[in-house]
Length: 119
Image (cartoon, rainbow, N blue to C red):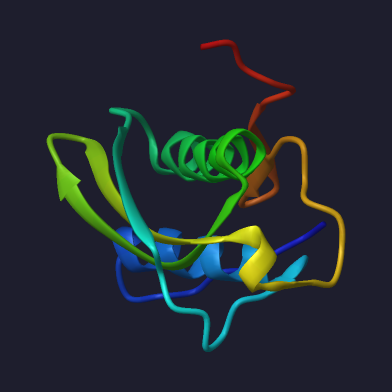
């Protein structure tokens, strides 16, 4: 899956990337969130922060069965504080396969590739 995200700030760009990624495999418009998840990504370079946020979203979908219907991100000491409004996957229309990892390329160079994580 390939997504593009453009916004006036890094934080808004990450929020748009979350929406674009989820929009590739689920229709969540109109879904009412049932829970909120907060986490911190980073610190690190912008590309690593983006990958960390997308990987966390994938991890949460895989482990909780919930999808983000909205996201917010705020800068903090080189990191991002992220808040996701989540809905049970059964309340959304799945239109594709959920990704298993993310890779970010910015300006033609690969930032990082994630193939999984342990908790």
